[in-house]
Length: 471
Image (cartoon, rainbow, N blue to C red; front, side):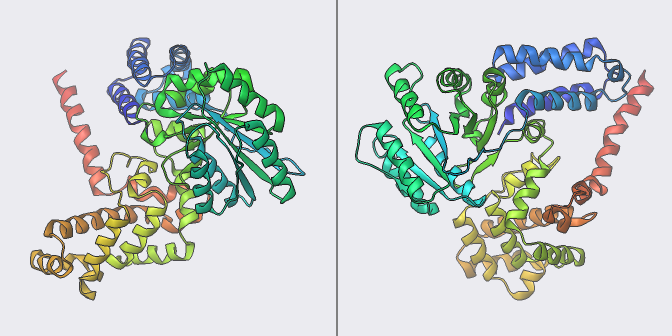
């Protein structure tokens, strides 16, 4: 997500790190690179122009010019301006009483409306609501069957009707929801091009017939400026209440996310960050700005941890870390829980300073392989991984029918995971992180201390001293 933009911003900030103070000249140089990075990310030109103007004005303020840390100041300014650009926060769904609250999804063909309808229904169930979906995409072959299948997976009823009249299906579906006590109706409509007058008239008539309380435009983030253009057209016809960006996990540029709010004036409500039905997140501009700048998103990490980790289990894990007794059995437990949170790689990207760690995601098949390897170890080996010399690894590989390289890979992954958990157990520890207590950053203190970090900082300072002597 936003990898290319993150790398560009980091390059700009590094170029400022060696400067003594903020000046009009180095701000101009920095903004030239920022402007180029944003345009390459497919951000709307007018949005880029205004953004750079705002950052420059803030950077040349009296208090900023006096600063001795240009790169740090610029990170703060760019972060604030990105937050303004994508904000404010508006993730609320306005529910009516008596129900049902009708949420209509609109969008282009192939933008992911049907899957988003199911994701939204699953999200609402977690919020204590009783949703029902209406299959009103009568144009795409198998669209109704797809929604029915998704509904079965999450335990949500899907209203269907053998008809080609989208207005009639929508109206009858809402009547069915009222009769059966559903408090939310999610209306999945057909994909349509904004230049298709007949199809646009159809969705307008559907909206007039059922009067939805919320109309969300579903946009494919990977289409960049096309998503922004279509959003403007749909908004002029339907008066949108918000936008849901899909496939954001596959978008390395980020142009749509950075442009769409500024161009349409409508808030981004949710983002799709994966194919699975639980991969939908509320959109928080401040958190997204932090991710774009490579600073992680600790708040989202905490929220995910609260959903999938038990606080008592976290306390036990912290004690094991303190004693140095974290073994492979514990590792397998954590892998299962972390997979539910999106995998180790996803977690790393949410941690400040750890977003560039290697890909450590594993699927169900990989976890099964890991279990086979671990179960081929002796009890002593599972408890003390340092015992695993080359001869023991060969024995384990032979016992579970795996290659020696796979055993070595598991040991490497285990050690990286253990190091990450050790870092989290510093300060007030993993328990505080997973319990969601307010002083969260103290739980991350282990990441900002230690011999390796101190050695790196010394290596960075040495060239500067030599440089001064040369002058």
